[in-house]
Image (cartoon, rainbow, N blue to C red; front, side, top):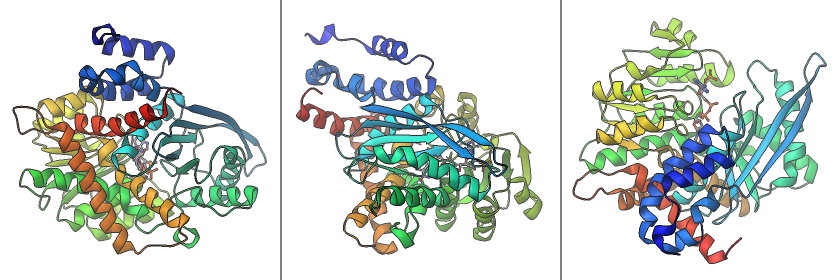
Length: 451
Ligand code: NDP
């Protein structure tokens, strides 16, 4: 078939939207990758004729199941559980579990698709998957969360395994949930294997895993700035979210001399002009991880501003780190950030910027690290947790931190290699990440033949 006979990007997207109706987040994630990949493969016939992108955008399989559990009042509750196994061309499926009322197939397909490219970018042998449930852990007792996790794993255990599919945490799934899930897997199978990552250190977890995503997001920014001969110290930073990624991004920024002035949660954001220091961050960690309270308590404790129901992007800053959830930076937020003098954005959350917002950032030539590169530190250390589990060893935190730093530098270099814009000094990290992530998966698929 001649190259000119192939479908073009609009035809490809029309077909994808027809086959996956109403899945707007999935369409958005595929479009972001496809727009770069189509350009890259325009003179590479084999990727067209073997329908590589079309195949990556069709998950290997999707498992959907009922999760039935009993609440503390003895009522029977029913949720829906999912696992999307997107692509295992370069390693076992790997990607987190999300427990949040907003979870649906579109969101999990977008996350599993993204994960495939992200995992490839790390340079580790990890395929892409994602899963979760429309269960809201908020307001539930520990016993209710335990019963839910046990029921969830009672179905999921048939589909996962240390060489098959290795889930981890994500929104609403932290150390507590991973403990309950791992306990139930062990009980059902009588096997102690590295089937989940993000475990506590006592039973096979890895040092630095908790910190890895947030730290990695900041390292990515550090590397982007360094390429321009600049650094982080003294920069005013906005962080959104107040969960795992936001907490450790803030910790690393504080360590490197950044001036972090915001955090947010699902109730609003806090603006602390004086900056969030280590002591205030410890308060946030306790508030969110132990007491599970709302951020307004921070404002009362430290005399900061609390803006109910709003996101922080209107606060003037040098650098922004969206670390809460998808599409939290709208196109108009992106324009406000640019107009307020923001010079760099590193995405800790998955796909936190709307498509046109990304274009606004790249058109303005500000440093922009997309999530599949910027937040890959978490899955990278999960990959190292799998290596430690299979050799029955625990490496030292210092060794792992060096490895994480090297992996993030490698990701930055791969983005630069494929993201240089001809005729300018500007690096399009979106294009760089998409193409670098694509090539390794695509070439493996070609090697396997048509399947
Ligand atoms: P957590 O559950 O620990 O924290 C999520 C934070 O975001 C909470 O502060 C939560 O508010 C807030 N939030 C969630 N949904 C919304 C919403 N719809 N509107 C406003 N705020 C919201 O999750 P993580 O920190 O683990 O994950 C954050 C992001 O990072 C997600 O996009 C996730 O996919 C991504 N990510 C996480 C990785 C990890 O290692 N944990 C790895 C790679 C990506 P509240 O406190 O009120 O619930």
